[in-house]
Length: 289
Ligand SMILES: [Zn+2]
Image (tube, rainbow, N blue to C red; front, side, top):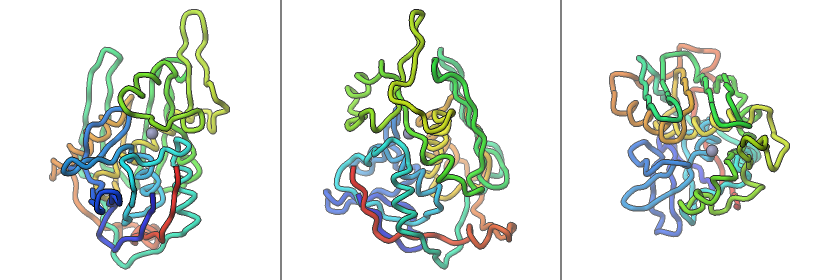
């Protein structure tokens, strides 16, 4: 996979170098089936597991980039977005002339789902910056946790990027059968065993990078999935027990409801304008799985 600089206004575009450079823009209209990972599809051409790379790009403020890839799955690497972040930061970013357009949320947009395992919820609300309030409730030993943060604070690389994906050992066979986690190993995910009446579940390949690494990874996923809105969000996100399907459903509801948002520049915030009102571009970065 290679990240290539793109002109202002191009957005994030995947390019399959193994299929005559077929391009799939990272937008809500190209979202394909979503369960344990987010995939994009256009005219039958697939890109799987886009969320961690998209999260790194949004987290670092990269607006325009071509992601050239010679296969259908974005490399999982260590299961976090830190390898992408490190490669991008080592390469550097530059500002482009055009002002960045934000999707400024004007009224609430919500998606909810009731299920036997409990209710799931996600909503977008007007607000300054890009703040995220995420709550999880998994079987033990992961349990309940909440993370609250603001992406505009610039702490993505330190607070979110290192958080790795995770899964229960008991689900591994099912995920493999679904064609997911092709390359997964102890080095690319946190593996957890479920608590049973006889035994307390535990992390199999610790130590964790943060005591609350699980919920931080959900925030990482959310940022990557909301990147499919096509522009940076200006608002507040609240998520409870959500996942890729809920995240992308919210993007699609957002894009359909044109009265709920406007495109806006952030000149109201002169303190942030020097950084936020420009687009960033990358020189080529090579990443290997
Ligand atoms: Zn993830």
